[in-house]
Length: 66
Image (cartoon, rainbow, N blue to C red; front, side, top):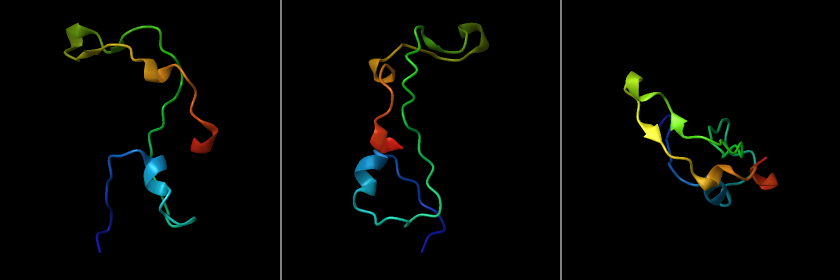
């Protein structure tokens, strides 16, 4: 049995099939709903890629996330 496994998926969909209190630890990355009004990323002169704003960040997370 592996010590740890990493899954890149919608955790809410995956956890529907997992019994309560199954995990000791789950690291997830929910949307924050902070509606950033500008392009994300770091300044180009630092060598970082600029990211365009997306609409997924406009709404706060659903109550079921918490």
